[in-house]
Image 1 (cartoon, rainbow, N blue to C red):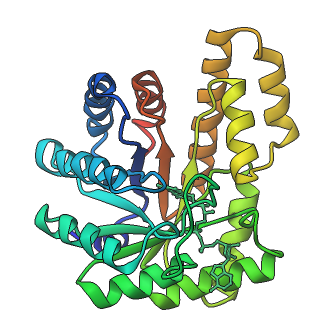
Image 2 (cartoon, rainbow, N blue to C red):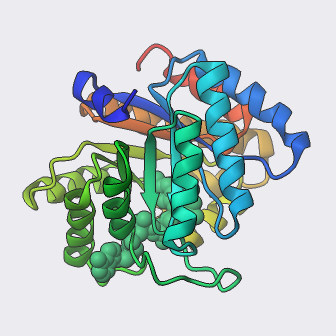
Length: 286
Ligand code: FAD
């Protein structure tokens, strides 16, 4: 089923994000995580896509297919384009079609000196446009409440978001953020710019400080003083930090629900403990 249909029928659309484990030994964790997540009957589960090489694509498609067949939940397959040419994207599409996968998150991918960039798809909107001509897919895109780090500013960032929706993205999922006001203001800017696609709010529970440094360094999400204080206070106590990080994420979700958000997309990091705590925290409010 096309995920865009779910956005037409209900609010909020609930989704989780997982990544394909690199080692077979981590597959057990994935099953444990998926079992917990599926108890909440998510509308879809998205599966990330690594940069460079067809092995990444195979792992993503394998896991997406497992989610569909074994857990009966609609998967959203991430697909990046900067490191691939048309022929390679064609072969990903053929693999998707043979598994009956019809929902794609079309992404450019981060620049990585390890993987040479190809010329066919310089931006995510180029991939969306190409996929539109390839088959009857439901295509989604990424967006950035605090601007993409390479954007010149808000105006250019919103213009890029608009371009990908005009190219065919039917809904958007945001980069993680820790301050809901930024999300509300971003959605308002989108509407003013004439972007009507539903926007799902990306929330990541933070459970250790190394993870915060890595994530904010990569995606440019800012840390509000309230959040910083919590992290500093519990920095040395692993269990306390876990509880505090989870409570913060759950409180973000509750505020989003109170503000009638169109979608909530939870980054689970494949961690069954995170999945369990999240599910406990939102079971009665979602
Ligand atoms: P784009 O939309 O192409 O934007 C990138 C930059 O180019 C922006 O600054 C934008 O303003 C600018 N731009 C866009 N179009 C144009 C244009 N036509 N002309 C000029 N400038 C333009 N990465 C992975 O490798 N694998 C994943 O699975 C993955 N999943 C993600 C899931 C979500 C929900 C999000 C938010 C991000 C994810 N990423 C993933 C990271 C993503 O690939 C990076 O953020 C990447 O740097 C940008 O991707 P994009 O699709 O937003 O790019």
